[in-house]
Image (tube, rainbow, N blue to C red; front, side):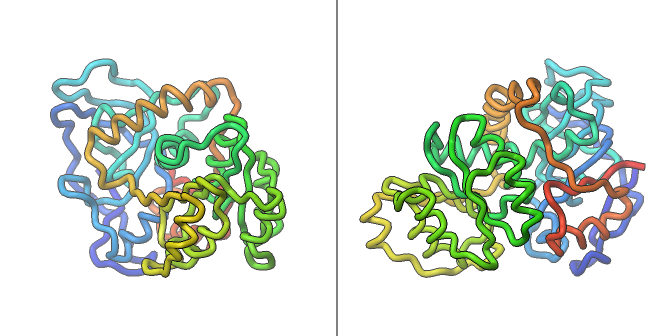
Length: 326
């Protein structure tokens, strides 16, 4: 088969479409013929040499895909050859085939095109595990999403609105904020022109955000704490703004607030299986009913993954950028 390889870390040109050995479905795995994959920031970090796959995972980038099952490995039940699926991966989505633990498979939702289903697993599992399983967002509360027009952001808006929460978002252009509003965002903040702490405070009569989903890390740490409500929860899922920041413990104590920081890729398979099961129970009915949907910016041939990485690095996209099989 062919896959995107990274012979040497570097810029987008480091991604090379190469012939490689076919994967094999091991115990508890299925082999999926990939129809589409999706680009995530973690893929860019891997390409740059900063985020290696966990032990035993495919060396190729790609944390989610969609496609058809072509082989069932030993010990797998409940799935059949030719089933159309999407999958959460530890790696290997930028390839023509990938071996997937059966517990990380999801059926393609009703009304969702097989290719577009590739935009779902990583973002839905990330949002559901952080915003709902860890931060316990409840109806009537306010969620602040940094990077509201990203793949994570567009899904977080929809899921929060589906459970009856109020949503504030930050983004850097009017176009991106308008798209967030179309998805249901209530409070629109241009981070280039406005202070999100002030804007969230004004919109909540000084109460602040009950939950913040943050992809920036160090750069926003102190301001995020200031933007939290009493008993607020800050969920950190990225470090685009650096890895080391100062924290005012007194403010955190006074607000009786909590901070969580999680990643998905390196979690043990049992944890991923539990998250996928929760997503199938709670989120898939919303997708089947058409209440939420994947947001796709564009499709690019998988062999042209370098172009897709450039789009994501330039932040010119809204939603997900897909890599489609030729």
